[in-house]
Image (cartoon, rainbow, N blue to C red; front, side, top):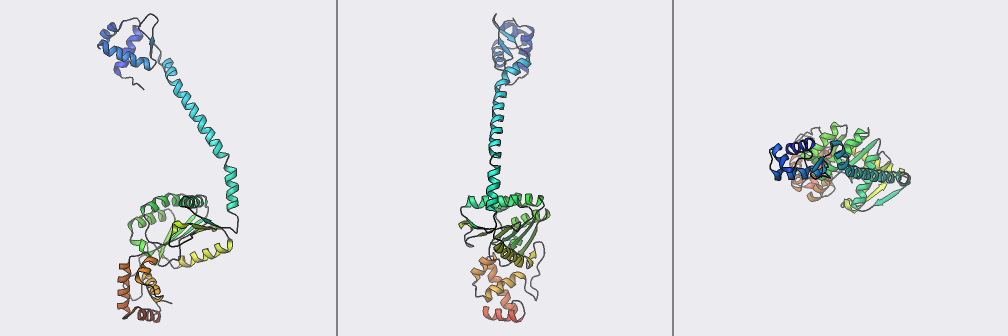
Length: 324
């Protein structure tokens, strides 16, 4: 759309005062060239501020009338868009009954459902997160979070907390020194969430309102699908499993004593897995730390226990009451 600058305003004002003047006269009165006046009059005509005069030349049109003429098409377009939006909204709202009915059927007690496909998994978790009312409990093995996970989880968690629901998340100890995970933990903890860390966790697990739980079909491949559990008996077991690990967790902001006579929680976890015959690579994977870190911890434990083998370290750790 053309702009009304100082030149256009000058020519328009002169056309109001002198409607029958020739272009040459308007040019002389305005201090513009004839070509500039003609170009400006064309611009004013596009804005409906000038219209051809029956006697030749141009007649000035009031700004109100010009605005009505110029904007009527735009107003019609806006009206059509508003009508389309209202129609689409009505059609969407018409599905509310179907959604609530289907959701109530999906929420029926006693159901265990396998969800496959990343989009379907995300949709289910997103729906559970956005509709939960009282609590979300999470076991989150696998080490630190990446940027994509933090970006998607943060707004959902803050919205859940704002609704008055409680969030408890259990990470692995290795997340404590990860800057991005620590920043995420600090932000949602400030909003009311509780976060702890532990060593070994059996699987990723999410429990919503103590009414629905989500866990992976394959703990080694979380993209393979998830199991959505609403069966009360299975839910009861999963709740006890979460509580078992939660009660043994350490607050995310708490400091763990290192290099003292008693082993840290991470060292205890390494000892337990050593006693179970696990290799360093397997221990590292299960604890979410690097194999190099496990090797270092094993070396420190062997030295502290005065052991010459992993088996001997396990025996002496048990005799000391470090593991059971």
